[in-house]
Amino acid sequence: MKTKIVKVDEVKIESLIKKNFSEEFMRKVYDIYSNDYISIVEKTIRFDRIFTEEFGGRKDYRRIGEGTNRFVCLLDNHIIKVAYNYLAYIDNMNELAQAKDKPKYLAKAFETNGLILVSEYVTVMDKMEFLECQNQIKKILDILAEDRALVDDERMFYILGDMGMSEKNYGNWGKRMNGDIVVLDYGYLYQLAN
Image (cartoon, rainbow, N blue to C red):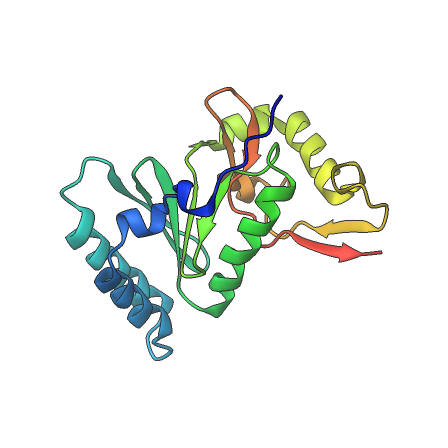
């Protein structure tokens, strides 16, 4: 395979964040995110309101729900995770970093500005499917728990946060169109040195 060298001005990189979110809309997101005087519940209500006002008329928009510290929706066939606070900002940054190291086991994360993370859309498992896939999920967890082969470093281990085999975690697992099982929410996947 031949390598083609191109000049910087010949490469077009399209940001999904810039494509979908105007500067004015991002200011609204930031104003909600940075307001430490309102609760997560109130932030959810406000994010839902501004996203519905901005995208509610689009067929490619749907609110998915919220996690512990992020508002989640589907837009432009991608999952959008919006940070409620600084911890969620870190989760968005962490997911982007982790996704590059383990693309086979984690839903793809395409880009983030910290406030918004754009991720791959995959089908969320229901509780029955989660239980039927226990053996495959256990193998993935074992690989992530001691991920030496993937990073080629015998000193790397991971804290798995809220993605284990407990029945309450089934919503953190999904399937790609090709049937691959992946972790959906991995902001709490932290790397430790031995």
